[in-house]
Length: 272
Image (cartoon, rainbow, N blue to C red; front, side, top):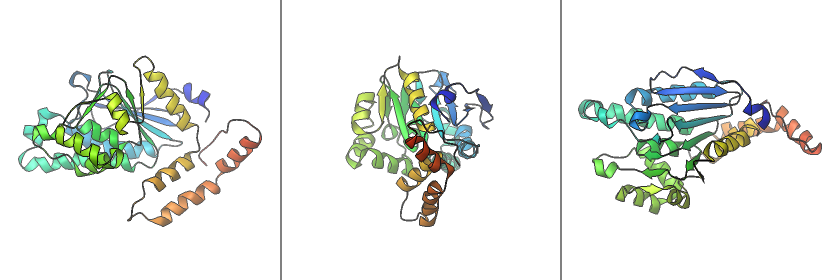
């Protein structure tokens, strides 16, 4: 795939299993859109439950190289879980089910074998920030805002999301965000390392397209191996890591990369 071909591919819609989620696929890239703009793209229980299978299904598509997550409407990425459901779904015997659904959704995004990218416009709050943290990279519009208001609601933030927050910004910043429940602007988020990139409203779509094209033109097997190595932990099966690394050196893409370098041309990787 080249950057030019990635710009001109037709878009295919994929069923998501949730009314408020949409998925669009072009060659090499899938975009999951949280589509509830009138409520700042809060995610309801149906959406949390649908995300793990949706992520797995998209990652299995042929030649899939990147999954982008973004909110509809331009005013919010995700403003958290649907508080309107809390009395019914997040209290009493149903509370653990709702909490498990959000935890499983975060873990599914983080465990995706291909890179994931959060495109953040506007509010990125609570569970929305947990979802963004589960992604590998985060681009924010310069008028975006970030917060985890769990301490103001009297609920516990999911442990897996808390772990990712600490791993991303460090213990001191993580405590600041959780203890104060304060709102951060995009420049503060960038300074903390909460996001990777910040751009203006006018340049947002162009900047996003640039990052998508840059990632999607690189060797897919190398991206998978790099993610696996970076994300490894004491319980990781080292044999699987070694297999991914070996697959890179045995691939046609490795030959293509070397040939393209010698011929002074951009490589065209196939993922094989």
